[in-house]
Length: 466
Image (cartoon, rainbow, N blue to C red; front, side, top):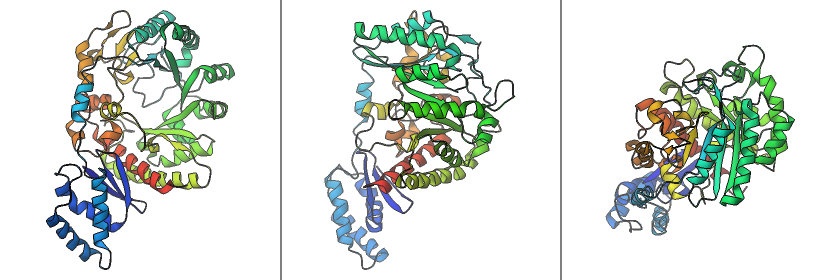
């Protein structure tokens, strides 16, 4: 399977199975398209049939008089011979075999606080309550969660724990205690914890920043962009004061203290209210942040801020606009990293990760304040996805097995999609929320993801050699 597109003056050809990406001239671009119906059906590295080559040559000479058509077709054949064009998909058997392996847990999302000090209008966690009650995780429950992770991680040495909420800083003393406990268990069990934290920043202070700079490998800072955008969707709980004014100076200080030492990124959400979200990304950069992401809101269609299908043309245009700005700032020496434009075409995720995604429900689990286990943070509170608890472990192995089979080949919409090895089939929670099963796909999200991938690859072409 191949995917071809034009973006910002570049002709790009992607060979999906091999992961090869080619920037070509107009003649080669059209030659690839003309030959695809036949070559896509042949074995990998097959010669172009003489009849098809003659037919393509004739059509190309009409379209490009005076161009060296034979040279263009020779170039296509060279890519075929190198197994970088029209290659066969050999991974379906691999992912089936991989999923038969014993499950090990490598990451936990600890819901350290089911409570929050902001009242974000789009919060899927219902201001931190997650369809339930407000609660803070005790040290005892968190300790059992870390013990569960160690016991179920097999031979894996590196383990990940994300302190999540609600707002984790509302239970800060327990965060510190659990980090200390995790560190105490590393040497005895030959493990290494990678701790991360997601915060809205309201309670940030110098002591917390210093601790995070010592212990947290990554910190996610929640901010939606320009002041008017952020404050509209992320108000304080009492409705008085600006959350933007409270947190931005703290975030700027925190990000500066982590620069070149530890990871961070500013993470925003755009809604129907700010479809010009490229302006919010630029605003992040102008504030001095150089690691950032802004995600589309996922909400029920009846919500006034939800993204609808009719918004897609504007959104896709905005990603193109952002990509051009991204390139310009990189070339001017004032660049930033935007999460969705960061594609590694040389190494990237391993094959298993490309095929099956984040590992929710298998390698990655969420833990509530009272110790219940769910496939990920977005399933918390949906009782049909309650998998067990930190005392007994995973008792609903049928849920785990269902997630184990969740991969790009189990999803009808993914099988013929060029983006399947980049997005790994998308978010299971979004599929569940919009279609009632985890093996479908959130269609609006898919269109945005495909555009982001196209922009990211175009950016690679534009910055090659810079």
